[in-house]
Length: 294
Image (cartoon, rainbow, N blue to C red):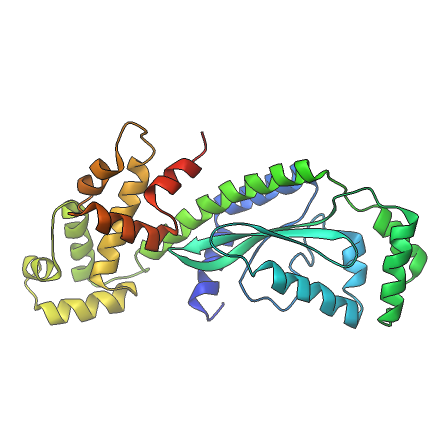
């Protein structure tokens, strides 16, 4: 069991049916590996995955060339905002990572690739082989050459279309991560269950921490401390996330203005709504709506 909360969340997502179904469908349709990986990783991302490139498997068996592959994996995570990043290694293999968020924090990446974006030729392989020999690789060269020319080849346009599908799925996983963060623990004190029921019923009203505490007949200090311990987030953050989840559903309706949605979910200021939405979702309400599948 991962000790890092971020890694535990990724493990939950990886075990989810939606992720497993998508990974299976993606791999079968593209014949390429797909990995939901943490931000920091110390092994090849696709090791042991179905459709892992056999050339890459051979290369990572050698120390210096394996280090070069890990360096590419580090570079691929140095992306800004919610945009995917593609990095091409010394052998011409391209990999892409699409960030997955919890609020505005990147918790991992959907990574795929190990593909060539142009048809390989003999001269290109010889250059790659010389580099590997310079690094002291002991891989059987004929075996390496056979694996290299078996690598999947896509046109840049085909590859970008596939990356777009990953972007859409990454948005779904970001939503799932937010939902998991809001889920109840296996057992919660009855007072927290009652508090959540009260919050759910009044989430569109201008409720406060003290108002919820009064409804539960406990002191504000005691409730604040107990709520944070049970949920991992404070009352204000929990209420904001509940409201933003409702707002995301309302944004599916193109006939509703953003300002209408803001007041509908309980925000008294459009500016405040925009700021909180951006912090939790990682993009503005308008940008979120624009990115929804048409």
